[in-house]
Image (cartoon, rainbow, N blue to C red):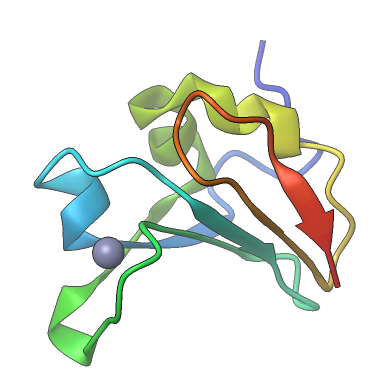
Length: 89
Ligand SMILES: [Zn+2]
């Protein structure tokens, strides 16, 4: 079951490192507009950004289900894919 309260086609901003190069998601942000960012934690230029649906992101990495309760305006980080997410505002 889709774990997020958002509609499945909510916007998820990610980077080429995560989607194309298999880097782990280490930074997540749930913004005030109820959209999401899932990034690898490296520096990014505009050319690195990709927009997919939240559902595609979840299918790419089901471990983001742990972030389904992250409130808007909060971000979460982890130091590796094996670590638990740490939330902060
Ligand atoms: Zn990246």
